[in-house]
Image (cartoon, rainbow, N blue to C red; front, top):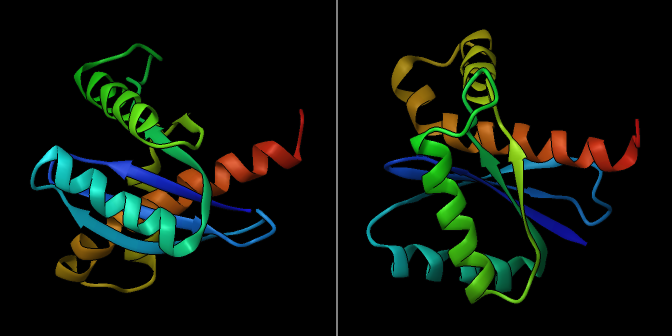
Length: 139
């Protein structure tokens, strides 16, 4: 069963996908946000192409755990997806995943321009891996 993860930003949505067994996350790419209907259609096409059964969306909580403007936007987007699609949509705490993704890309030697192109999908894969790991480890 494949799971799709989304890292929702203002301009782009990073995507990652699980393997069939739900053990590992791989970066998939990103979608440039144009308008809500077009964005949802692109996600729908990914769901069909990869036979996605669940979606997890990174929830950008504030460091103190409170819900800010970004988290409100993500919650509304998740609600819209849930209403339009017939698969479960989960929210997952994504605090610091973009920072982790940036560090991974810097450590791998990518230059700033290439990091900017890849950071969203790497952040999505970190979100998804955390979600997958939590399912295997009930503690």
